[in-house]
Length: 104
Image (tube, rainbow, N blue to C red; front, top):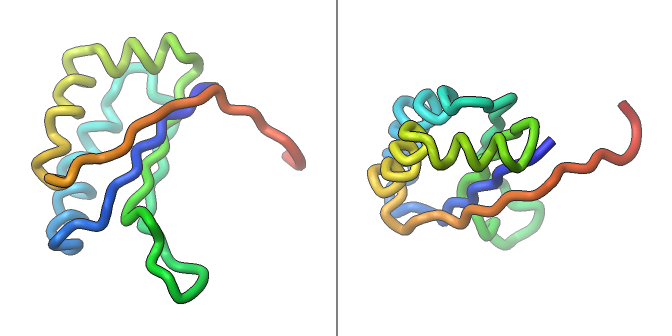
């Protein structure tokens, strides 16, 4: 498996971010070719400090090549171009080969 991670900073209007992200962006991203699963969530503090990221997105693909193919597709380019519509502060994007350890 290969995992794509997107980290979003805290937006000026969290409610507007969530509306657009869940109503427009996630349904678009879910259509990426070769995508196996999607997860996302909004950070919650474990202590007194606010979490460093507002939102975390994870997408799994069968391989690095499958992820790269999805991201360079016309739809992948559309998904990337949509980010400023809800996150004008941008996002941090990275990926890695997933490894599992422990119970199944």
